[in-house]
Amino acid sequence: MGMANVAGEDVYLLGAGFSKAVSGAMPVLAELGPEVVEQLGLPEKTLAPFQDNVEAWLSYLATEQPWLTQAQNLRNRALFVETSDALQEAISERERQATAEPFPPTMARLACGLSDRQSEVLTFNYDLLLERSAVQIGRAHAFSDLYVAPVVERQDPGTGIMISRSRAELPHFRLHKLHGSTNWYYSGPQQGAKGDVYVVRDWMTWPELARGHEDDNANRYSDLVPLIIPPTASKSLFYQNEALRSQWRHAAAALRSATRLVVIGYSFPTSDVQTRALIATNLPASAEVVVVDRRVGAVDTVKTLLPQNPITESYIGGEALKEYVGDACPHLIEWGSSQDSEGRVTARIARDGVWLSDSDLPSQRDLADGASAAAIQSFVELRWPGATQQPVYPPSASTLQLGFSTS
Image 1: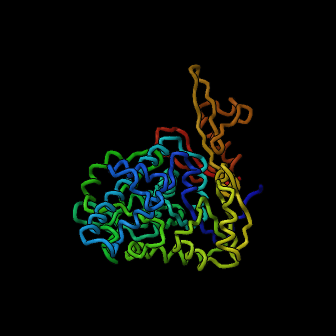
Image 2: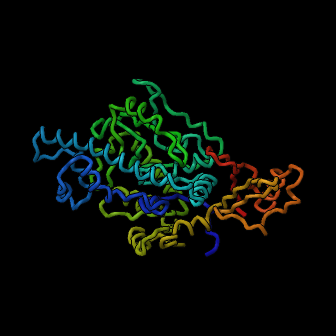
Image 3: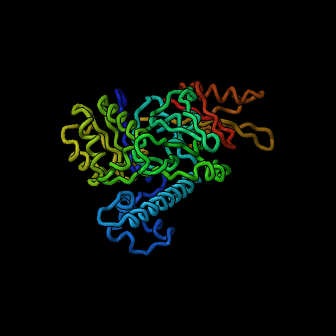
């Protein structure tokens, strides 16, 4: 398949299948139900009345039921808080497993492509894989550079400031986390319209670097609960909060201006009435749709929801995300050198995570007289124009330089 057409106002829609494609360690939320029930010490059949759907159970716990007494509803509300904490920790643990693996070139390239186009990205995932990737390649200094929602941060107990949006120097994408995030906290769904949304763990790259601050965060945000919104039909209680509502309004505006919608790993569950309505009522009929999904039936699902929109491209199967990124995003170039025990300098250059063979590398003569770094960089720029213009220096032990090129 040739290079995907990426002109125009592209909007991206990401679901759980996106994170699953990045790492097999990442779960869909329904998979975490038994784990959460066990962690909370609840009976195994707790989820049975909800068809083993932890999302439906969360919605039930958060909403006052008219057939229950006030005491029973209060107990449900307490269990909702405990369950939110357990889900947050379960998702974060899976994310720690995923980020223990090497940083995938696919994520570096996707984060760069989204940033170059300054795309609007709508996601229903709670994890931080995309934010980590943007920080890892230098397109954001902190996760909050990317967020559309007006999040705040507590500097000291009892105080907070609005996080500045001016820190990111390079173009970057705008991230709408419509169902919340594992690093967002608030006072709970009963807090009303004006409660703040707080962000924690705001600076991590792909490896887990924030563990030293967990105790501080536990104290600083101990009065709050993770902001995780279950994708069920009943959300009115969750969306009283104006900070959350604002990003949904921004998302609707982005969809209305879209010429192309790229759907990656989102299944449009029938229970998520609000999300389906958001897309169906705001996306122009003229907008093209690109489907990227592991599931064979993904295209039919989109056709059913958006019968008027042409599906111009589809990437289906286990390598769907990698194939789409290969067609639509800049190449990741890594370069550096190594020296053997006899003083011979050897170039090390990789394209999209694949190391060049000796026959493709600059010769030993080109690297003589201590000019190896300059020679390698000149070779890289000649071979992949633009790669060295804004090099990325990843905050890790790696001595390689990184850059991106559309060539």
